[in-house]
Image 1 (tube, rainbow, N blue to C red):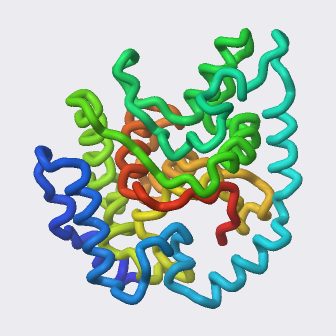
Image 2: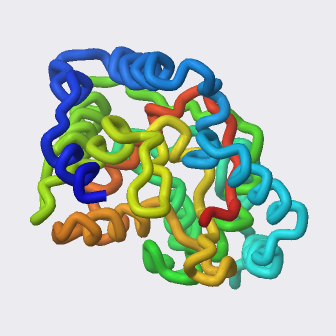
Image 3: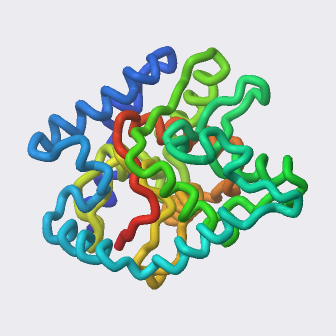
Length: 278
């Protein structure tokens, strides 16, 4: 493990040095092709399973758990929240595109009118406020439980993040900078683990690749008992802390831009939310 940590601290593959003027699709293809060359026997589509793509035994255990997942009650609770009308009688389905179905793959998106990245959680809160309700805390239990169900309405949709304006490209580049920037006492970047060392073992864990990571949140982690929903940005907080770096709060501009870049790298892959992870 010590050797791997030292190697991670010193690694810096050319992917991180991509020119700021590169097109987003060039960035995505460089990462995808890097993984293809490193692991030619793994299909890109299988990266939606994260680290499980590298371990048939772990994938088989996952499949078994997902037949009777321990968190069904949480998803049912989220469905009840979704279906319960606001005080004015309307529901989330009334104010989200397509009734909230098959839309999550479009998020995060850049809102030109607001001049910033908007996440699916932002859209949920905008719906609540527009209907006279208080916004939920980003990363709070209410939001996490609600999205365990709300995101399942887009299962099977392919990630479809758009970066189609100069302002959107600027936000994308900001997220990219955060992803590749070394930080914290351990001097790691997100790319150190999830590109440079993807597929390697760190302690008892296989490091998952960045491609596919954004397709399956929230997740229920075995280490949390298997019945607590964890959002993607809450995982960002955890990763920052693991490298001994002070994290932003969920929903910050920095983390929203990071999620924008991060999600774009999974474009074209199918979504499957509310899943189990070790």
